[in-house]
Length: 136
Image (cartoon, rainbow, N blue to C red; front, top):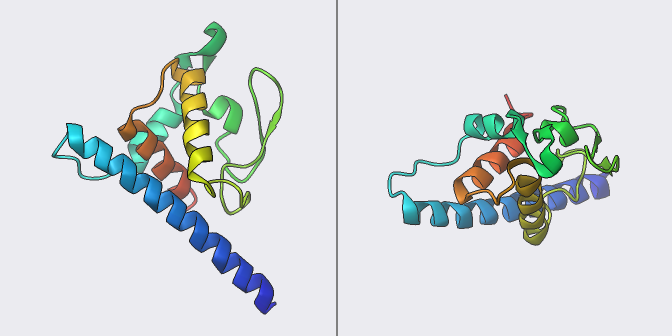
């Protein structure tokens, strides 16, 4: 039991530090263009995540189209039908474990839904929404 608890703490710490470091980098980028920046917003992130747009292949989609609104469940890629593991780091310990993967998937997913790369503010807001969705 102690081993399981230890592994949980290590995984949680690693995920938290990776996300915190990435959000700090995004904050620095946002501040360069907006000195009044007050922090990322779960509410703005949710609006970005659920809003529908004419995306890749001319289809009207949102992030929810693939990831669902329940981050503890698998999603399914709208275009390929491939299973997408849960967004919640509580249910998918690999989620948010490496900064390069966070960047890769945000770039890819923004391009699929918005047909452009997300801004630092948008990326920070979406990550903030995802990591805080389960929290009340």
